[in-house]
Structure formats: C-alpha cells, structure tokens
Figure 1 (cartoon, helix red, strand yellow):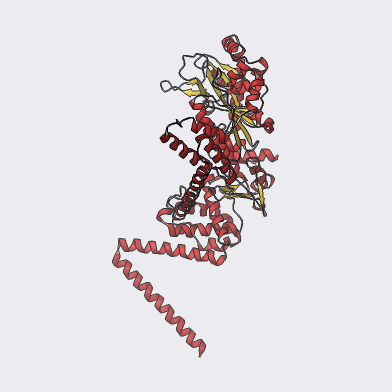
Figure 2 (tube, rainbow, N blue to C red; figure 1 turned 45 degrees about the horizontal axis):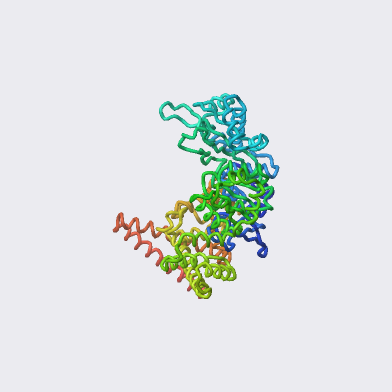
Length: 607
C-alpha cells in the first residue's frame, strides 16, 4: 500500500472531518451528528450528515460520502496522494514516503506547479518594470489609473511580445516542458514540437487561491486588434476557474461587510484601490455553484456588481439563483443607464463615495428579478400582461417561505395592477404543483438507483440487479461490522462477485476484513472519490435498515453463491444440454441419497 495504516490513521485523527466541513458549510447539531446543506450540490433542505465519532460524512441527496481524505480530494480537486500531503502538512505530521513512489509514474506535485507560477509572476513583474514594459506601465498608470502601490499589491506584470521569452527564462531556471505545459504557461507547436509562450504582449494579473498562492493568470491584450481580449489559465491541477475567485484571498478577510462580486480582474482591482477590499471577481465564467458555496463560508451577503449589458444581466440572474440555493442573500448594485457600464468606469467617473451609496442602496434579489421580468413585457397589452403574470407567479412560487411568497405576490399585483388575492391564489397553486412534481422526481430517482439504471459507477448493476444488491449488502454490513470479516472472507472468493466494481472493492478491502479490521474506505488511493461515495452509500443503506447482522450477512453470501452456481449451470446447459442434464440428475440422486442416510441415522438414534 502507498502509506502505512498507522500514518493514515494519524492523518484522520489529527484532521477532524467536522472542522473541514465547517470551513465550507454551516453545520448544525442533530443528536450526536451534524447536518448542513451539501457542499457538493445545491439544495435548500440539509441532507449532508457528518458523523464526527466515525470521521465520515454522507449526503442523502447526491450520495457523496467518505472520510477526511475523500472530502479533501472532492473539495480541492486533489488526487489521493496530494490530499494526504495537504492534510499531513496542515496537521504538522512529517510526510511518510510512498512505498510505490519508485514504481509508478506520478503527476507533477502541486507545490511544484505553485513554484512554476511564482517564478512566472516574478518574470512578468520584472518585464513590466523593464524598458520593454513602458507601454504597459503607461496603460496601467494613465488609462486604468492604477496607483503604483496597487500594481505592486496585486503583482500585475507584463508578458513580452516575443515567441518564447517566458519559456526560455523558465527552462533556464530548471523547469521542464512538462511542468510549463501543465501550468498552462507554454504551448507546443504542432509544426515543430517546440514550446511557445501562451501569453504574449499582455498585461498579466496573477490569480491567487484562498491561501495566497499564485494559482493562475489572467492576461489582457495590449493590442486592441487581438481577437481575444482576455486569455485565462485553463484548468490545471492547482486551478479550477469554477472554484477560484479573483481577489478572494483578500476579500475573505473583510467579508463581514459582505462580498461585492464583479466580472474581471481590472474591475476588482479598481474597487480595492477605492477602498472596497471586500471585492472579488469571476474570470471568464459566470458564477458557479462551487463559487457560491465557497462564498457562503465567509458571508451571507453578496452585492452583485456585474456589467449593465445583456451578459451582465444574465450573470446577475444566475448569481441570484445560485447564491439563494446556499443561503446567501444577493443584492444587485444598480449603476444606472448613464456613462458607466461597470464598477471601474463608475468609480472613475463619479468617485468611491458615489459607488458606496450605490452599494448601500442595492436592490434586493427578489425585487430585481420581479423588475427584470416586468421590463420585458408591455403591460398595456392584455396578452403580454397575462404572460408576464404567469412568469411572475412561477418565480414567486419558488420562494422559500409562505410569508415571503405573500409579500412578493402583493408586490407583483401592484406591478400588474390586479387584485392581490388573485396573484396569491395562483402562487399557492403553482407552489403545490411544484412540490408534487419534485416529490415524484425524487421517487423516480430512488427507483432508478435501486434498479441500477442511473448507476454511473457500477455499470453492470442494471443487468444484474439481484446479484449487485447482495454484493452491496455484504460490503455494507462488513463496513459496519468488520469483526464479521474473518468468516466472510473464508466463505467468499472474488470470483463469487458478479459485477466488476464490487469485485474490485472486495479485493481491496478483504485483506483488512480477514483480520477483523476496518479498511480504509479510500482503499489507500486505489478508489476514486466517486467510487468511495458509492461504497459509502452501501453502508448508509444497511444502517437505514437496522445495521445488519451476521445472519443477514451469511444469507446474502449464500444467495450470491447460489446465483453464481445458477449462472454456471445455465452456461453449461447452453453449451452441452445433455451433459448438463445428466449432471443435474446425478446431483439430485446424490442429494436424495444423503437425505435417506440422514433419515436412517435419525431412526437408529430414536431406537
């Protein structure tokens, strides 16, 4: 195995699962356990349960599950070994050598990629402050009005207008072509196979992760004739654009004021320079569910300050929806229809105090959505008025509380100039219909899961529902009762498993069960997070049915072995019906003979 059991146990003991979950979600006590809204999918009712005593978690909604290592893999996008390294480092535990390190090809370590990015950031900074960077400096200081202190604070740099200036510098520092391409700093020419710089003649904005490490870059064109205004680092092992917000490493320290969310590094930097250090920005993408869940760790109030164009309005609506799902209140900063299309321009044109007043006077998310819907219809036209009413009713019916629905039904009635009672009645009806549809949908998902139709991990389950259900029960019971393992391992072979996935799980876990020990649910890195979640579901299913017993375990084992025997019998019958029939008759006669012998022995005993 890659690491010793003692080392992994120490990692788990020193990194409490409840502390890790509390950093990304708000936990509430539920008996001896803790619950919260799931950090891996959007929901309004908490279905994510943390079991502190057992160091594990399970979501009864999306079925994500595992331990502290799995959680770190899932939340930070790490591979198993990198997750172990991260946890060891955070707990101050010396890293144990990987027993397989010399026998397998490893991906580039995350720390090495951070080193690559740090050196690239230094190169870009030096280039900005060289004679070659004069035009870029002028753009920042004169057009953008960025102060020297601001440029220094955010580490803004310049990528020279050369084919391989960065690549040559980095290779000279000892970085390999694999490291440079993995960090999305160099590309490979299709014609020559040589490396070239991805960022050329661009202002370079380093993108920092929450720990203040340079994770990526956002490069803005200096030549306005360039087709692409921005080039952002693609997803790498240290950067996922759906998870990282520009400036959040600073904004998180000022989140008690709420977070001001905008689009693009320059707008964010302009707000910081104006004193709004709680500003953060999305890069090349609208806000995602992962962004929303990350924001919810630091604040329950967000001010959306996107551009006033169509794309900005679309991003605002999407942001409202996602933030609402994770319990974050979103307000919309209305910059008006004047001379400023974004926060940067507004601050330049009107000053920081005027922007502060705009933030303080932000419109509530529901009011914004109602006004946005109404603005798209001509309410003097009866047909359009009815369509507007239908859309308003559909939206208001999704609001969480009855009181909230009543308040905004009244607001919608005022906009439409109709009786409030009519709107309330339609909202209530739509809410009931939506509830029934959701319940039907959830029931359908449950049926699909039980039948294996929607199982993306064990693809053979849909063809072998009976066998797979016995396999899942066996694994689930043994996860709860590893003390049953010694006898179970003697009764079962890997070949007794009908599905490849559960056979793999048995092969990975059975050495521990043979000793009556609880296995590492990650299989010491042999199982992926999605596979671990599948297995965690087996345990949760057994727990929901009472926890399982040794009698139930052996019953499932016998049923699985009978299924295997039946399958083998069917195979032989198909290949050679006559021989298979003779074997069956011989087995029946042998069975009858044994029964007769038992009757004779019983009779002698009675005499």
